[in-house]
Image 1: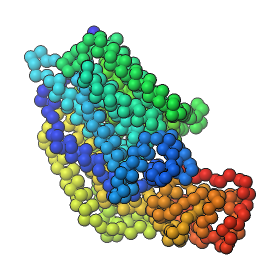
Image 2: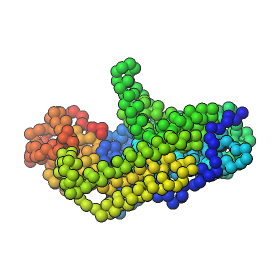
Image 3: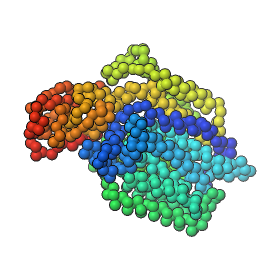
Image 4: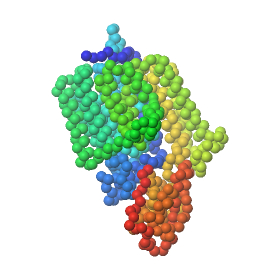
Length: 597
């Protein structure tokens, strides 16, 4: 028996968000951060270095590595995508070429979140209450309005901005998990040949997850999606409204399809030896586990804002429909992602990234039940927070350009010594246009579309897009200087002969990738028989250097300090012996591998 719906929505409240505005939101959010910047430390530049190495002759595509060190994420597909992009577009800078597939992955994430939420909102249990004399929202219009709200909620999430613009396995996992979300949401609305679309999306999603270092998540999402569907049909009612499959035969075909794809992906993961069990939850009590969980709770609060309070409101207001697909499916995806973050604290932010699309879907279903006072509170908080953020970004940029106000200019000089600001008309005009668009959006929100159910998420999404665009235009040179290995690598390159090879010892994968890309250096691990005239050593590994090389062969040439991190120093040595094949101390010791980033 169907439970009464808590949603009371009139047809006037489900007016469509203009498609042009929605497209502009997506374009303004996706492109900044992919175009015009350098690879950043640590995971971004490390992944880029592995992709570059895959393009070299003799590289193993089943074991991507960086100078002999296997990747720490056990991923394959993200590095394949980047390497193929570099090889297919040699006329582009490699750092730009590798980003193009990831632009597509982020676009897929936004698109599948919209469509997944749309199909969930079409289910009978998600529909609003029918009015006695008519006038309630039409199912298709209601579903579109809820889907618009979910996309706005996803763009508004604070944790999405940076990680979704990096060329790392985390973004690949996000894109493939979103494909799974869409497939499992849409599969019950299709039958016969129409199942091909969701079936293809599910196959690509689960396979991509397994090949992106997350086969366990692929298994849990596939099996959980199957259980959600079976539970929905057991405790609720099979979808029988217009646009939904009917009959037990179709239901069993859908269930067998999900189970079959999941089993095949698990078999593939076993054949390729992709299973890696990571469970690093610390001991209970008031020790490390308690502090780690407290850190994760703080991360969860800001990372998933503003989706998480709305998602909790959905669970409260729709508690009678917890077994229904529109609540159970995104709830399961969220639980899996949050549990993954808890059991893998070292990558908790990247694990939480997968929770954002399902949380955005849950947040959208809160809007039909939201009180007007709560919606007004969201608007005022968003207006003050993002307007203040934009003002700070502009003031600091003006200080970098003119030296006034003095205190922000002094802070930049102290935190990024040696940085020289530059003016770009393109960046300035883009940032000014985004700021004026924000002012127009605030005025529009205050005076129009008051009845639309997605109205409370327009300002959060617009504010998040504004802040990201300002950072990626006005602050981009400063961020590149502070967050990349460009300054250090170029300084090292000036101290060595670029036409000769350079040995490295104790250098991390991220640093090595930076030296190779920014410095254009040919690197070799210290200890190889090929003798190079220069040696670059991480300062922390200096104490063990004598175990690997014969120190009398080398003379310290310079110490290079990373401008924004005094603890990341590298030492540049020059070979002083004439005999390049001079014996090395303790030749039987194993070469020191690259440090993990």
